[in-house]
Image (cartoon, rainbow, N blue to C red; front, side, top):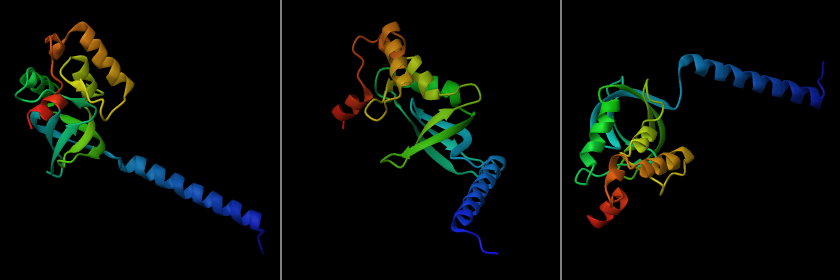
Amino acid sequence: MKLSKRKSKNITTIIIISLLAIYAIYNSFSGESNDTTGRVVKVSDGDTFTLLTKDLKQIKVRMYGIDAPESKQAFGEKSRLFLAGMIAGKEVVLEIKDTDKYGRTVAKVKTDNVEDVGLEMLKAGMAWHYSYYDKTKAYIQAEKEAKEKKVGLWIDKNPINPYDFRKRNS
């Protein structure tokens, strides 16, 4: 029995759609995703930490969308301690965005209790919004509100953006 071209195309389309659906269902059950999970073993500063994966691989992570004060800056240690309070020793999930020029994984971070760790850093005034690379509206708003409320680093009369601090001190 010979199929018409139209019926043949329809059958091919149905087969392709079916295979894609099976693949999607398989991936949802197998737990595959672009996310990476692990335990935070070190917090270097207010936007950088080390993650230990279940297969014992260490990943240096730079948080996406924020820029925390450098260690030698005002609020540098407070920012690091604030971040450590949220993530140190805890299981986190990374939504990987990129790799930076230093080889660090750039990612949004969440825990069981915190949906977006970077956003919480901004709300607490423990970091700047990294507006050079990110335009997330919630991040813009969180920084604006922290400034208005004068919380965290915004208590300082002349806080220096870490981006500017690095340029001056490099």
